[in-house]
Image (cartoon, rainbow over all chains, first blue to last red; front, side, top):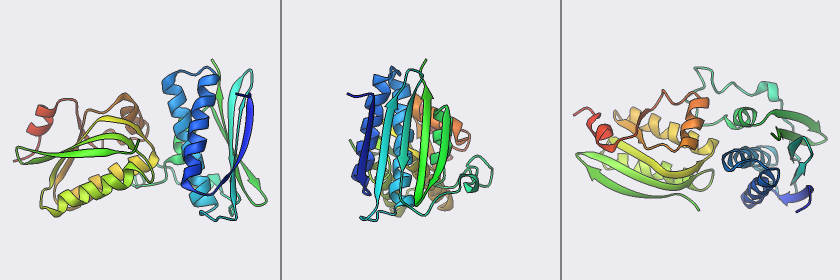
Length: 136
Length: 115
């Protein structure tokens, strides 16, 4: 397994499984314990679901790009879609009392909770989200 | 592995023993259908045993919240049993831990339902 891999995937839910499995493998290779690796793969799954469903809206003409990189300091995972773009500041706070019982809207919150850094970058078109988990 | 479940009826309470993953497109649809089916039979006291649920994502959390809302709207009670540490952690950081009635003991859970 290389220290860096980038894959271009169709906008289908099967791609989510591929991204999730790869995230778990890279997390373990980076030395994270089983629980941490599971959480990393779970939030990577959240990012991939967002890219397929909300970004690309399952458009077969659009693709999801997933990049995994292990550096001496951290594990970096980027998920990019080709959708209309996302304003991260416009995402409602799922912990606000009026939102706690909403059935959706917790994906980005979980990414921020389980990773050390979460960055958004606007593409033309699309959104790239990069999640960083520092190695011990 | 997607989610599987079995249904038991104990002391007037419907117990769903869930196992596997509760995630988008897999277990989450199943849990929604299962709770809806239980409600359609007129049973409104439901206990979800999550002891063998080893993986849940935000969609799965959303399904648990939707199930709770549906059961409450039907005038019933939905409670959770045997959370794994992973699910417990997720409910805590999403501030849902206090929204649900959660038990580690099935007898205590069964006894908690109003008669």
